[in-house]
Length: 117
Length: 115
Image 1 (tube, chains in turn blue, orange):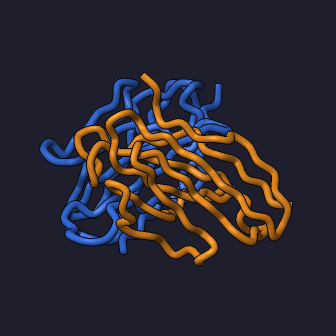
Image 2 (tube, each protein chain N blue to C red):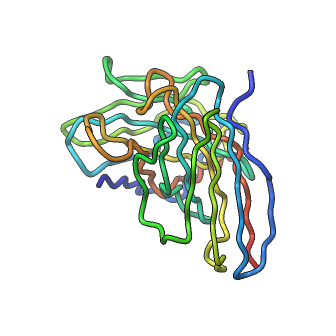
């Protein structure tokens, strides 16, 4: 089974500063990769995903993530954060090529991003 | 367009009771998965159903069960509730068995508190 590591449980950053949230996964088999954001008392919202093609994927609100197969990483970055980006961010992975069993997501433990005014 | 809807939004139960949580996927989506998110942790996979068949379950006891109906909605049942079952229960749907082009879409969850 896959495992996902988000090394930073909390990341404080000043408004308009850049940020990187780190994510590493365990297996080098073909995978799909996701970043979800969770605001307080809400469910998960898909921020961006890597399914195939370009290793650099972008979201509509300025986040981007790069799939690095050799390092089994999918770090999330934003060049300039806003107060509204304060939330919990979860990295998730699912196996691309399985024939049996569930096609489920494996989540990291989350990174709490706090943007300081 | 309606997203993934879950009911109820909040629920308080006593230890030993039974609970049923409900999920309606996005129209046309045939896969429904259930996840448990304990406070301060990432979601953990419980079940996936696709085309009304169970395709897999996570590492949860037999007290947890689920089913998917002909209209692709789903129920998650938990028997003999324990304090440790207190969590946010999330439902996710996708068009196909895998994430497809649009990924998995989550509902807002049901917050279950066991006292």
